Amino acid sequence: MPSPQTSTLLLTTLLGIGLIFFLRAASKDRTTVVEVRSPRPPVEVLNGLDAWLKQRGWSQLGGDADRCLLEYRGQVDSSVPLAILLSLLGTVGAGSLGLVVRQMNPSLNWWPLLMAALGPLAGWIYARRARRVEEIQIRLIEPDVGEGSTLRLRAHRDELIALELALADPLELASDGALLTSPI
Image 1: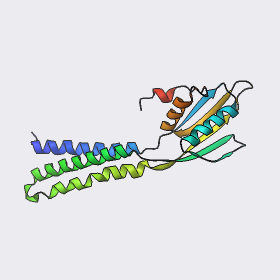
Image 2: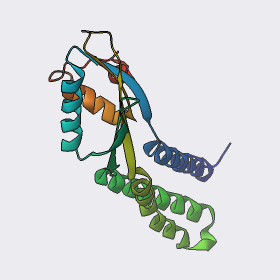
Image 3: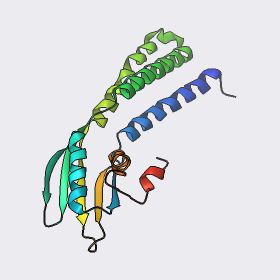
Image 4: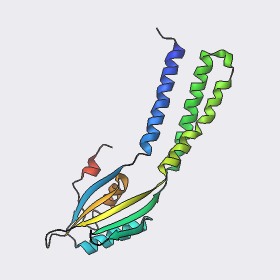
């Protein structure tokens, strides 16, 4: 039967592993492609998208008229409250691991508690990896005459969800709804 220190060490190590996987998932690339349709003319839909993207801080990078493609670029910043929370959790977790190591090996005195100083590293890693430049590509798909507009959007999943929620009514945009029903 394992001692309480061994089981506590195991649980604390598992919490540390969970923090590492959370840090990886928080900064993972979630670029997605979705098709949206609107009964409105393409010029009206593209102008509405352009205005909305520029209002949110995106700048037009360029495009390709032959392929009916527009590209936008924007700086995505990390969440300061999440970075602070991760720093706090990392500090408490590393301090707990230090206490367990000290209990298992008392000859180390209180030196293992210095592991708590590594805690803010979790928030720093998150902030550094989550801050990045992202792109949005908008491609006009040629619809049949009189059928409105069909666009293929390639962007970060969260930006596509925000776009779909904000512009569904004003531009009458509709997609298959998969972004809004996904459990992720």
